[in-house]
Amino acid sequence: MKAQHITVIGIAAASIFVVSAVLASQDRFTLKSPNGIAFSEFKGYDAWQVIAPSQPDDAGGCGTSKTGCIKAIVGNPTMIKAYLDGFPANGKPVPDGAAMAKIEWLKGHNTSPYGVTVPGAQTEVGFMVKDSKRFPQTDGWGYATFQYDASSDTYKPATSDPAVMRTLCHSCHTRGATKARDFVYTSYAKR
Image (cartoon, rainbow, N blue to C red; front, side, top):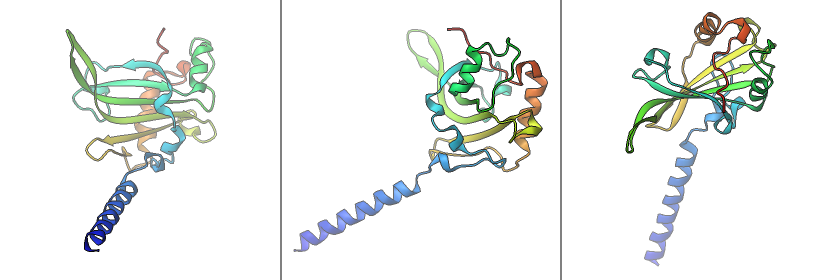
């Protein structure tokens, strides 16, 4: 009887531990940036088609990665269709509903028969979404960045100030990507 009692207590303790661990793990899709953009608006982004890779010449083009980074810029089907329809050369703006994600990793290295720079630890994911009614102050674009913490396997908004994405992200896009490109830097890479 005593052994049976110990077994029941052991199973109960293990069950409580598992349930607690599940409840404690973060669901990134419940997060919201200070400007109201929810991570859940981009559910499935990790399976979107690649628009192009990006590797800044120095860490100045990296968000969280201060030692250099590699990025994959991916687009939802609406964004990919805009590119396939000739954006930006066709002169049409990106349609509402288009979205892009910029997934950023530290630079890693592979020791295959030759040196290869590969993605290391993920550092953040940034999003752009076109919604002219929702984001009229930023030419229809909404921006959000979520930093990734590998040690806890969690994300958090990159800032608590709702104006930062407008002043930092959009001001950079208006300076460098021009209205003719609808403020989008990344060109669709030829396949």
